[in-house]
Image 1 (cartoon, rainbow, N blue to C red):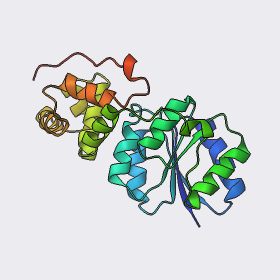
Image 2 (cartoon, rainbow, N blue to C red):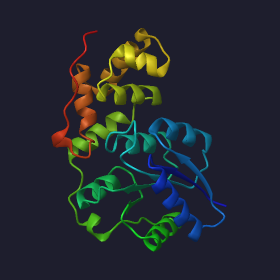
Image 3 (tube, rainbow, N blue to C red):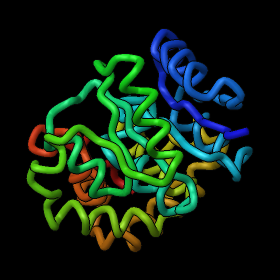
Image 4 (tube, rainbow, N blue to C red):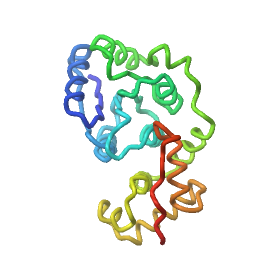
Length: 222
C-alpha cells in the first residue's frame, strides 16, 4: 500500500486532502506535517514514502526553498506542490525546481484524485497553463544550486535569518549555543558565496514567491 505525506499548516485543507486520497487510494497510509520543521522529521521517519503533497506557504518555508532543499536531500521522493498561489508562473517555477506536479487548491476532488493517480503512475501533472508560462530565471536556478549544498541545520538557520531572528534567538530555538549559530552562519556564507548574512538572505530570496517584494532583515554584527 502506498504511503503519502501531506505537508500543510491548515487542518481543514489537510482533511480535504485526506478525503481526496481516500477516494482514489483507500488503502493508502497517510502521514501529516504542519510545519517545515515537522516535515523534515516526517520525511526522515518515512524514507520509503511514495509521494509528498507540499504546500508552499508553511511556517519555516520561504517560497520554493523547502522544495529545493527537500529535492536535494531526498531525490527519490516525488513531490507535488499543492498551493493557493495559482499563477501560471508560480506553477512553472515549482516544476522547474523539481516538483513532479502542481495541484491548485481550488481543484475539485476529481481533479485531485486524477493528479495523484497520474503522479503515482510515474507521470507529471499540472494545469496546461503551467507549461506555457516562462521558465524560472537563471538566477533562481543558481540560488537553488547553492541551497542544495546546505545541511538541514544550516538550512534551518538560513530560514531563521530570513525571518529576522538574531543569533541568540536562533540558538534558543535550536537549542544550541550562540557560538554554534555563528559557526553555521559562517558555513552558510561560504557555501552560498555571500560576504554577509544580508547577501545570503538575498540569495535565498531569489526563490521567494514574489522575489521583487522580498526585503532582507537588517544585518547583525558578529
